[in-house]
Image 1 (cartoon, rainbow, N blue to C red):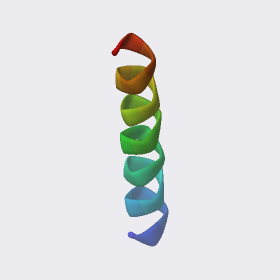
Image 2 (cartoon, helix red, strand yellow):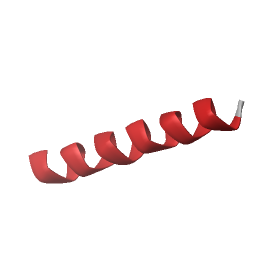
Image 3 (cartoon, rainbow, N blue to C red):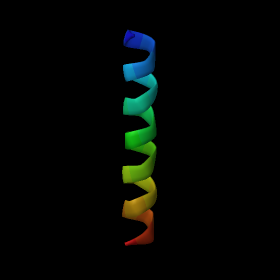
Image 4 (cartoon, rainbow, N blue to C red):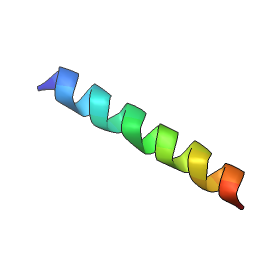
Length: 23
């Protein structure tokens, strides 16, 4: 569903931000 895709996208963004902070 679109809701699920939106949630997954948000999680990906959060992971990317955390990775950037770690680096």
